[in-house]
Amino acid sequence: MKSRRNFLKITALSTAAVISNPIIASENKGIENKPNSNKITKPIVVSTWNHGIAANEASWKILSKGGTALDAVEAGVRVTESDASNMSVGLGGLPDRDGIVTLDACIMDENNKCGAVAFLQDIENPISVARKVMEDTPHVMLAGEGARQFAFEKGFKKTNLLTENAKKVWEEWKKKSKYQPIINSENHDTIGQLALDENGNLSGACTTSGMAYKIHGRVGDSPIIGAGLFVDNEVGAACATGMGEAVIRIAGSAIVVELMRNGKTPHEACKEAVDRVVKKHADLTNLQVGFLALNKNGEVGGYSVYAGFNYAVHTRSQNELIDAKYDKKQ
Ligand code: ASP
Image 1 (spheres, protein in one colour):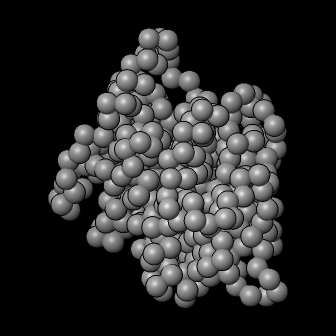
Image 2 (cartoon, rainbow, N blue to C red):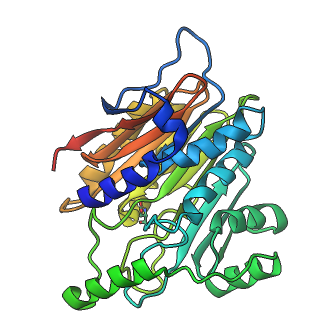
């Protein structure tokens, strides 16, 4: 995980606003963003991993002008999807074991409206297709060729998502791997983003190229409402990253939101969901999962099975990366 983390860090930290902002707190172990007194911290946007810094900056342009959380999260994660140097989301994402890039994404708003696409090929911004599914169809999820055709009908253009770099990495993998997909902590880094806007409304987005070198057709947690993402405007929002199979098994993001409904802070809720992942899996080898949560008061928390998960937080006074607390060192 370390090499990819570093690579992503360099990518994310190249944004001017971060360089000019002195409050990057990478050694800041999972500090919760607690509002002073009873004040609600809004607007606020939070994202998984280092690439969340650039995504949050795009979202902030919308939120700081009174825009909606829904518009903010769509615009935010589109930045990551279109970044060809990022090898875990959208364009430039690592392919499946057959060398085909397949994308998963979902979006959810303050009215429990949601849209998702799974196993989508040839489209650079699956999150915007997911939003179209939400707004222009009676359905929640479209998959595979149907999702692709729907995207073309909506005017999305065909894009070759396999960059030369990703192709080279995949070809190297093929030499050593004997075509055996191995799920491990090296090959995933979904962006999940959650926002609370000036009007106090929550939305979230989640988008990924999924587990690298997966079996063709595999879909993870990221496009599944309740697993990779969940929003309840009365309570809060949560998203997940890491081994999607483990997140699906415990209905991860829905659980985090329910735990907040029952009085847990975002940090406590994420920790309890991680505890559940740990309890339900006899073999935790390489089983990294991280949760990120934001409640109605603008409080934030994150927690992961193993060290290494971080998240980006942007408010009026804060623009920083925070290392999540974790269950195990390695
Ligand atoms: N959760 C994603 C999946 O299983 C992987 C990731 O977090 O990057 O597809």
